[in-house]
Image (cartoon, rainbow over all chains, first blue to last red; front, side, top):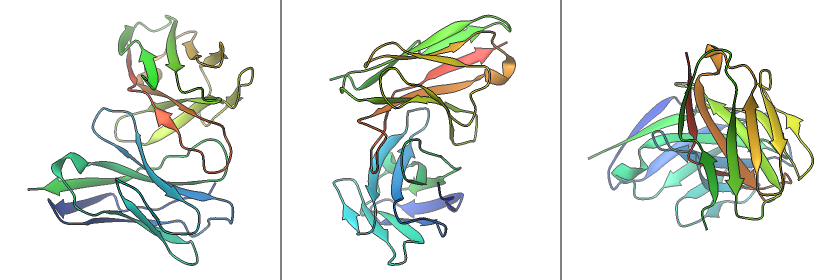
Length: 108
Length: 114
């Protein structure tokens, strides 16, 4: 499975868009990009995933570059409840490999 | 629909004691997983079960055993607990281990080994 690189922490103002980057330069053609988040002390929560095309759901949007070597998770209107650790994961089949993630702090 | 449930929520053990962590899912998923999370770190996979009757090692299997009791239940056993196994344990499930599958996590079991 490809390795991912994320910034350790980011801040975002409440109501603004939060853009979380992820590098996965060694991704292979059949590997998906997944995003999960973990709010303090809770189990990880699935957010979104994609293969090649940009994806959007009720929680977020996922933008994947054309060469698939990086992606950005966008929370369009961040709230205080979005404060969490966000994990970018790339995998083909089976087990997820979690890295350290990005701690997003949403501030009033 | 409870999703993924785990018992117990908290447990304190003495070194050398044994215990079993229980996990159950009601989503009719084929695949189930056990992870551990140490302070300030991401999750690491201990064992997983791609389907009923099969189990495979993950990144950190030493000191653990698992049983896929049936499609719903996947238990994790510590035969002789050590302080290094102090951690938060998460169980997860997915429809299958194929491409693009989403894993759903339980609330976790917090284990302290003295």
